[in-house]
Length: 162
Image (cartoon, rainbow, N blue to C red):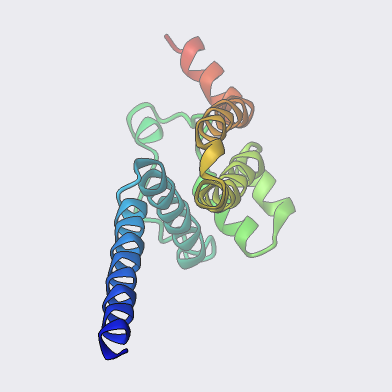
């Protein structure tokens, strides 16, 4: 009887050890998933953009980045005033934001939507592993379309300047 119990205890220990190794392998694989790494990176960059917009204020005009095009040519470009516009949007001053850059809201919304999509797609990626390829394709196509819609005035400006 004690031999039988010892065998059961040994079997349970082996099963527990195997389960722990499987869980550790899954955690390691999750950390090394390129799609998740890219999503985390992009979400981090977007959060930094929003933090930049919140830290630097339009009242103080203390933005560390200035428009190179305007410094070189003396003329404003399509992206001039974007930092001011973002800062004002973060503060809820939408009308003033449009005065600084009329495309600021569409670019801000692009980043806000992308932040939500990075989180949502990462959750779906982990929750439904059978749909990962379709999810990545949908993400790439959808994000590409949203990018072109948001940045179209900038793309046109670049092309017309060539």
